[in-house]
Length: 126
Image (cartoon, rainbow, N blue to C red; front, side, top):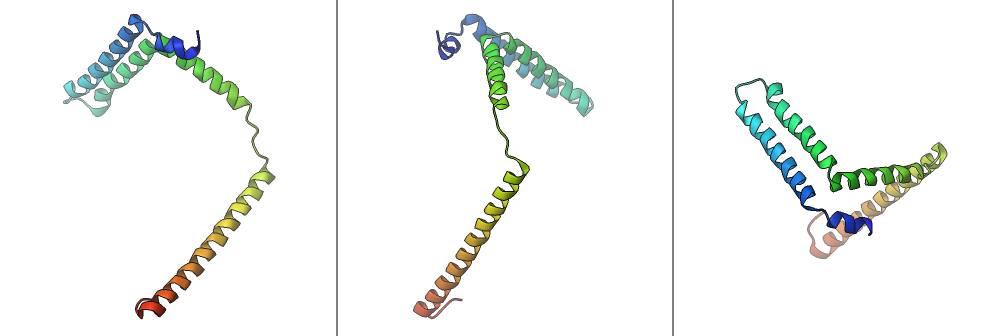
């Protein structure tokens, strides 16, 4: 069975866990509004607590284990990256700035030519 098939075959228990996580988050948001007379930081405690609890519930589902596996694979791939040296970065930056200046000059000259053409053809503008 491939990884994609396992995620699609999530059973009833996983669906119940996801539904429970959603209900927990909704309860946390409701707690925010129930505590309307309290200080702001106290109002946010149920929201943060519900998010943490929902993350724990989802973490024990198939979706959570697949997410952890994804993070492990992403971390492995991240180790394979070869970052450019300082000299390569500076050279690339100079080339990019050079092309930006050349493109800016090109469009400035093009604007001047088009403004001149508009004025010559219509007698207005520029």
